[in-house]
Image (cartoon, rainbow, N blue to C red; front, top):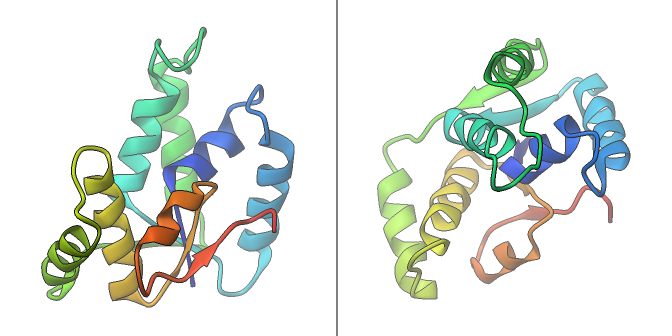
Length: 142
């Protein structure tokens, strides 16, 4: 299963994003596969935060449109919602310690631990996730 990062959904949603068309096509193709994709509510809320943020986009997505986008995506038949389980905190703390995470690396470690716990490939445009040992990474455009 492929677990999506925030940047995948942002690129798929925002037309002016640098890789919008390529990511949108990759995501649509992935959704057509029997396995589909996985996403966490934390990633969905992070996507909502980014696409509505006036410091990120000159014209951010209005909240009603952003909520419709997230709600529609979340309800697709081939989208599986994953959540942390019993092992998550231990994996998360272990990753934080291994990479001496702080600041913005903390949520990255959280997402990496979720992917590891659920046995998913982490799909991201952020190559910095390679710092997490044992994380299976997938860059959608490679």
